[in-house]
Image (cartoon, rainbow, N blue to C red):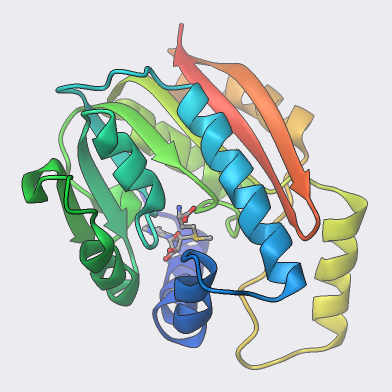
Length: 233
Ligand SMILES: C[S@@+](CC[C@H](N)C(=O)[O-])C[C@H]1O[C@@H](n2cnc3c(N)ncnc32)[C@H](O)[C@@H]1O
């Protein structure tokens, strides 16, 4: 079930990633030179890729994995290289097109099913794993919980997601953003209080079959994100 706040955020994110920030995102997720600030983000994201992939089996042959909010597809490619059958969804059609173009030649076309749409309405059937890297960071904590409940219903093994942790630096950026409104500004990141979020996961009836496993924060320059592993009880 999609709440009004989730749907409202999703359409702002679609506009942002599909148009406003499409070129910047394309560049950030490539090997092209970027500013020093963006280089810290790129390095932080690479570290996060490593964390999330280390929480998944080395051999994903024949297993179905949903890359929820796949962007330009970097994680989808890593998953496919481990043998997974990947369903890669994103609300931005432009980013999905870039991802399709970037598929490395050694990955068969049928290994990744790229779909444009809402990660919560992907109608992908049962999957073994869900990966959602930095695609929930713009949503309210209650909507993150609802997304976990929704995706948990069709995930048989594990979900690995990232959320934005509440840190003084992120809080400051959020406040500054409010002071200086800008039409094409990124939809604000919504920092989550990690211990409270983990507690809410434990108390959420819709996640009664799930528990939090490992968590790990990655902080590198202008990149901060917190990985959460959700495992079946
Ligand atoms: C910060 S980017 C991360 C992309 C990718 N996971 C990565 O780490 O490279 C967030 C992505 O989530 C996508 N997104 C946000 N909400 C979504 C939703 N409800 N369904 C599908 N994609 C969504 C955005 O379009 C964007 O591509």
